[in-house]
Length: 149
Image (tube, rainbow, N blue to C red):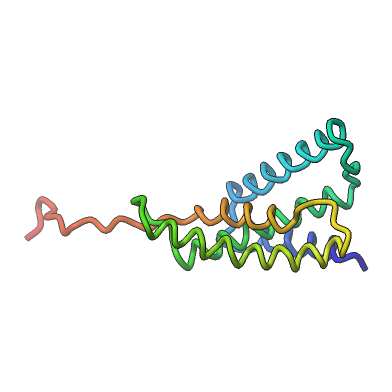
């Protein structure tokens, strides 16, 4: 059985039933996938890359969906800080470097030794984009509410 179709089915089930995945997250996956499909179609016509077959298009969906899901889970564990600074930079490295490794393993599973797309980079980029899903909440100082003691 083809791993691409198995992973696509599991990914659809994940996005349908998991409470952290909503329509905005799914739109992000579709947007990344559409951009990648246009990118590889343009590469075919301008730079003579191999034409993306339907299975490659499904692989692009699977990789971007799994990357965004990893980013959402990461942002749930460590939400994005409100202010810019060292914490954001450190957080970006902690999502990007391991996701490159996971992406390399995913590339070997989906395309084998002769890959035609940079799946590991797509996975890392999608994980980085998905990691902005949850933002740290601002805790307001205790305010006195009128009418209370």
